[in-house]
Image (cartoon, rainbow, N blue to C red; front, side, top):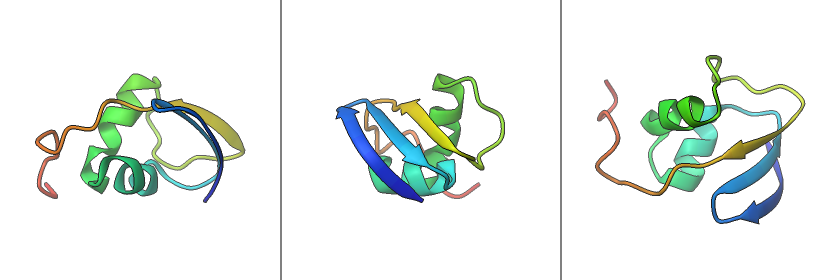
Length: 67
């Protein structure tokens, strides 16, 4: 995954990668990938091509503890 730019505190543009990686990097918890998916109307956590994503606010209590 290559992060090409960080447009604002809540929007990023990436080339490939997964929502797990992005959640781990920006939210500190890979189990929060579903929050990013829901915000961007995505189902598949695997990203292809260049994608601009909105990120939810950081919330350390929003994870599912690996479940």
